Length: 140
Ligand SMILES: [Fe+2]
Image (cartoon, rainbow, N blue to C red; front, side):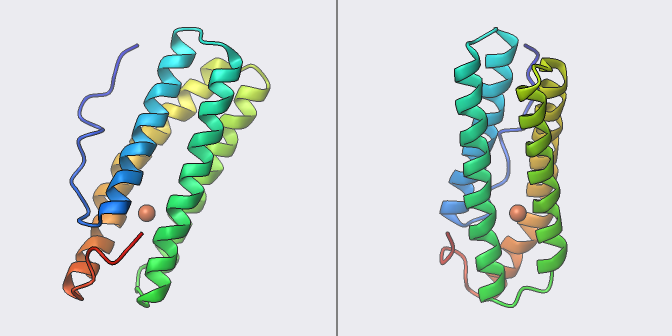
């Protein structure tokens, strides 16, 4: 499988728990792509999808709680971004359930690009806000 370069080497947000969860999201999507490409059993792909959805839900809830706790101005836009990603994950689940590996792979590839872009924009903006208020490290 061709691996998109450098997507997992993202700038740290400065909040340890958030950085670890971002890394886990990247790893799960990449592992899922490899599992599909190498024809791993459906149960394995199923479990990876579940882990990706669960991790993303928990991660987004943590970030959103942090933003609400600190009355973050960019909350609505950031939450909308999270919602779109969860929609994409639901699309991946539907593709998997209907045996459409190509659609599953396309969805996962879009999710990788989304994660990289989201991290460089919305999450770094949140990180800068946290740093400004001396709040770095107090998050999830
Ligand atoms: Fe985020």
